[in-house]
Amino acid sequence: MKKILTILSILLLTVCIAKSQQEPVFSQYTMNQFLINPAFAGSEGYTSFNLTARQQWLGFEGAPMTQAISGQTRISKTSYVSKSRSVKKRIKKRRPSGKIGIGGYLYNDQNGPIGRTGLEISYAYHLFVNDGQLSLGLSLSAYQFRVNTADLVGVDEADPLLGSARESMFIPDGSVGVYYTFLPFYIGLSAKNLFQASVKFGSDNSFGDYQQLRHYYLTTGYKYDMGNDFEIEPSILLKTTELFNLQADVTLKGYYKRDYWLGFSYRTGNAFITMVGVKVDRLYFGYAFDYSLNDIQRISYGSHEIMIGLKFGDNSRRYRWLNRF
Image (cartoon, rainbow, N blue to C red; front, side):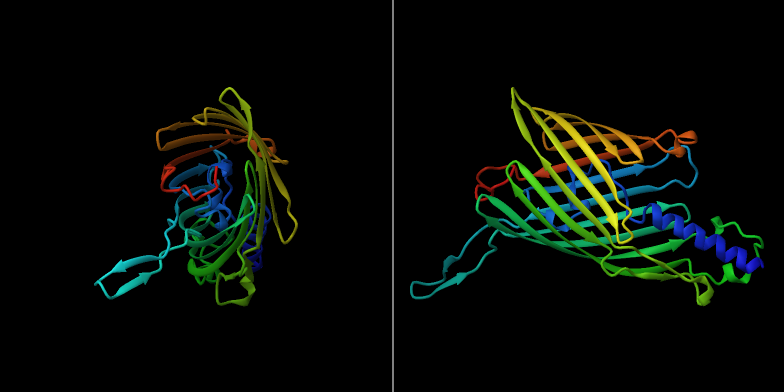
């Protein structure tokens, strides 16, 4: 009976997490869509680095928290060049076509006793379609999956079943995405956890498997120039798993000279979000506060998210071949 109760406690915990979230949640997704779509790597033509820190449900012990750092770039366009080594001999060497984007993403995500620390490497290929740009992306990742059994409360602390549990394991995975932009409109679709790895907590089959669910993301938005240095950007992010746990972020952001912004977002059945930000030269600073709309608000002050970005390459000569924002 003690073993059964312990097993049920673990399975109940994992099922609850699977229904709520397995992938990190980001409120400021419009600032760095690379975190949810590998096809975004290099799509804007910038070389950019982003740091994100998120703490959910402040004041609630064991609440999810995420730290992520990412970098992406577009390989500059050149063409065949003729390099003369002598008067009689010339060698042509091919250079990149400017259609390739690459990026990397290092993250740490902690959700109660379950944590993941991983690295994701992305490759994107960009095609010009009429006046728009179509981007195709693929990423491969590997992460360490951790379970802190010390935080699991069982009937018998000396239960050998808990003592034999695996607390750490490495898991490979992958993501795929497509992203299309036609000024000033954009739309992207991506899928994460392609391999849907099953994590075995122990050698005993009674532990069962904790399966990573495949996650799907659909983003779309439109930047409308209102004149007088003002712009507005309505956007939406749809998230779901193969169990059809659909959730939507509906966002409206306003920009002034593209140096200052204020935004509001509604996450269905979950939170109301306020976002502010400022650009200083190449640096971008953004802050988001999530006010919970469900029962968690009784014991939580809300969720906080900070994002810092650094962008290079805003040079019309270097990227004159790019049709971008």
